[in-house]
Image (tube, rainbow, N blue to C red; front, side):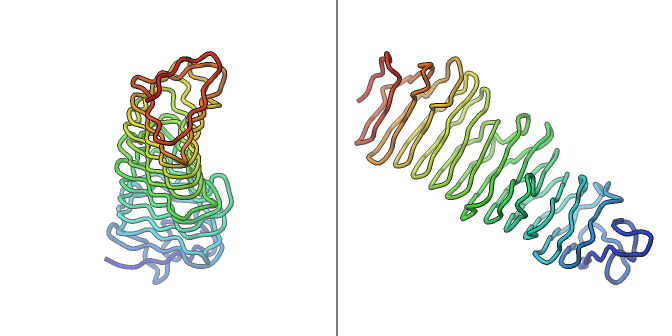
Length: 282
């Protein structure tokens, strides 16, 4: 409907969303607007309860050096973040969230009790954190070219419907994804239980360390390292595992806690087992 740009420096009301003079043209954003934070250093730190608004887009540019130090409750069809300083705390519903750059903070961006359909992380040097029992990523997580970024998924967040693609960076997750296609970078899977349907590892390292009776249905390793050396689960299950040349499974944690339902298929790959294990390999 309209474009609204944050100024934030109205005398005596600095940092307040609902003050007209804190916006260019003196108009507070409404549903359907495109909102931009593109310059200046003024934080947004008051009137943060804006959950009645659904913006067409919410944009944070690289020349805005402010922060949102508490949760801004708002919704947007598109969220674009390329701010390189400070931290941004958000709570709401976002159809597409594009993280192009971040500060080096932990967290640099935090989603609390938020619903995201697709999360794209293509840059950044800090941590994108998804937390809260109400948080959900429902469809996809794409972490592409983001070698300096970390995605942290807290316990209690729902990512069971999210298919992950990663080729760089770091993912640390305490809940189970729908599937993972990993072409590089590092993934740490630390959920207690639940089922990961498919993990395809082409390169990089997957540190698979569930703490309970988790199930990995189909593991296919074309390259890289599938590392279970830090897994403390009393028992977890891998239903079908295939390892090609250039790929390695290392399960040596001393607990002999991995249960392979079917024989492990080695097509030139390597499996390093705990001493005393009886593992069937074809």
